[in-house]
Length: 303
Length: 303
Image: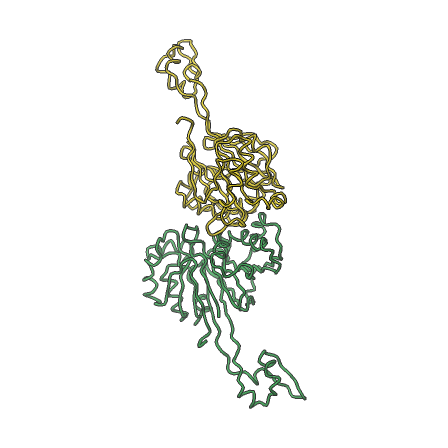
């Protein structure tokens, strides 16, 4: 099970009822944030899912609306006497950006571990998720994220008995360990059934449409994409500012055969995102415009 | 006339209904901010008195809750295509702090003029106010501010006639100019009555009580002081953290013979500041606990 909250759904500048774009992701009691604009710590407080359980912050890029809330978040964690390391992931330039912002957050109670993602965009693991960063097209180094929550294969007692596995070893094997007893070696494959699909979420702001989004998000459960501009006539502006139209985001979700599409990161020029929702649903019906504080729970299939 | 708004009244960390401490001051259509914590730009939007008319930002000190909103404010002004210079005043270290924060606000549409206030705490003028900075006691360089709006003496036609000033010169003299005509020199004193009192506001957060507050705020119209802690039992914490109790702030207002006292910058440990208001009013009756977005209009006496 994976819980999500769009803490804020605004792009560029916050509005009184629309905080800057930030996503809270929770798995098994631990959490991470994707982007951390001004006001994110208040969004975390309002949500009530916990601040101390945040183990990582993934920064897409270094425009202020995605990172200006970082000093406040670091200080809030310090005030709460956090001891565990906090991991920050971001594209090239991360030490420079965090170093600059830390002029007002010089003393922390916990280690800050910076992961500057340059040439190596290998998957990494945090809060039980396999996170794969990939390059977006925003006119500056900018990363999207594929979050995959794997699911262990189910225990199959019929298979275990057929393989002659002694019952006292079942638990160890189910946990993934290999055990040798009386000269016989047993492996997890002796007691586990077929692999089971996990949960996959694809997040990408800010960017023009790129094929990598549909490829990395192929048959994902949810795509969370920027919907910076709703109206078709904003197309030249979208191209100029390296953003997307609602329609373009929907086309990516359609191409990826995604389960559902959540639009966020709305321009301040959009008063009511739903007004332009038909531009997206005409291309990909299962689309919603996120609101601040909206939550989703994604479950394993047939869970 | 001088308008004030406590955009936020929180200290240390913002709460969902209590933004970080920031004060909006407006005189004659131009404005300044005192402190600029995370979320200040949203407070300015909510207030609706204008963002582009902000000519200066006075930073008391460099704890994050007083300055973390600066990058967002700079970008909001840039997005609005501001051209006029923006003046930032703050204690020693200003270029280092602003330089650090500007890693996420590198490109602005307007000149940023930094006034680092070190040894010379002379008054300066902005938006028609005479601003006098003075040192507070917060365990780090920290400044309080005396804001004085002077009022010109009234034009006195009886006096002007008695001095034999030709009527066509009255306006020039009233404006403060000295004029010579037909070998006779006339001065503003020839046409102006007695000096008239202006409006004075004293702002001081964060600090232990210091005599300078009462001295600089002597007979001011309004004192705006931190009320970090309400309960008397917080005294050791107030001393340790270089903050004040409600009672201590009230004693300064009493000693200064201030017109009224506004408490702000409440600890997150205070749920309802009014609960502790009697601790202040017992010492200085004309005290209120500010709320976010509360406004005041101060007028000249007998205006």
